[in-house]
Image (cartoon, rainbow, N blue to C red; front, side, top):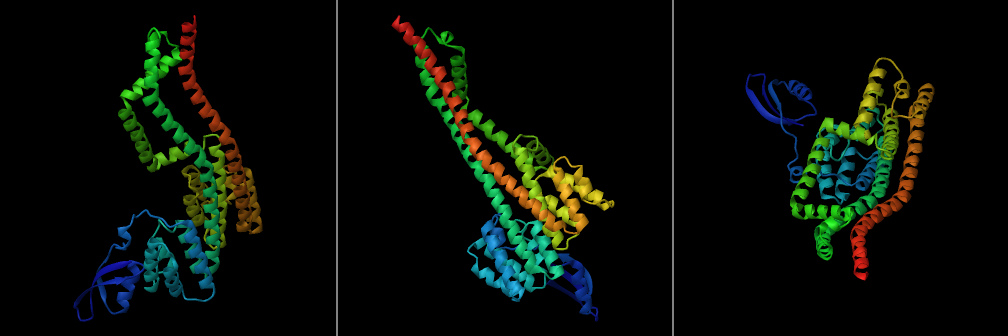
Length: 406
């Protein structure tokens, strides 16, 4: 971090300048060591001008991040200085954005800033869990081992996300196409067919009720298409904005945990993430309270995160973590029981890794099962929509044919 400072020397002369330091206190101590007396020390925005050209929310691909972590772990383990390792990896990455990020990190480390603090400047690339584990690895002198664990954790998390997303891609695509096709038919096709049916029959009132409902709906959509679109996208925008607020996000996550099937997937994913992340932090020497705080933010569900915060309060009051988790609404009993065994044997990290493996396999099984169920369900939904439209159109035509025949 850069600071503007104003200080006086031994002769009483005022000196101003710019200097880099990890903290304000460290800079003051350094100035005192140089025989200067600080008067004003003010932090300068540490934003990288190159980064500002890009979207501040831009992220790096998980695959590229894993490669970087593994290569850095290998180099550090082989005794290559950290600054040299970062400089070498900076030249190997293909992503222009990641290259700029690594350039900034390398400069920070060369200026004496710890690697964890340098990584923390890019929260869109390196998560809080990532930064805390690196900080623990630096403090314990086991940075290479921590980086290996991080690479494994990032790979596992990425794999789980891909499986869940791939299971949801098909139904979302089919639902989107069905919705577009339905509105297209109702706005452009049904009005023409409705006019023919009305002309051939004795008027709209002689048509079956379901046909009249469909024609009325079609007429409403045709005359208010722009209004419907504005309201539709307006509602989506408002909901998304609300979900981004703390209260909205909590309520949305609570709703997901009450939705059948989705609740099961989210709970299992959350438990797997908790187990693997907490185990990694504990094995890195991070304290239980700090590990709980970091793990809660990495789970991805505010309701379960709130439960972990309550568990942290209980631990702070002298209880073992397994006790508050045994009363949890979302953590199954097996988690608290396995955790209790780990606390008794002193092998919490080993036990929780096994729990994480188990629940990741459970997620895979559920996702695979959903994939086989979703396809026939979507076919039934599509068939119902097509059948409803066909019945509304073909029923009156059949009646008219009979009348003509008689």
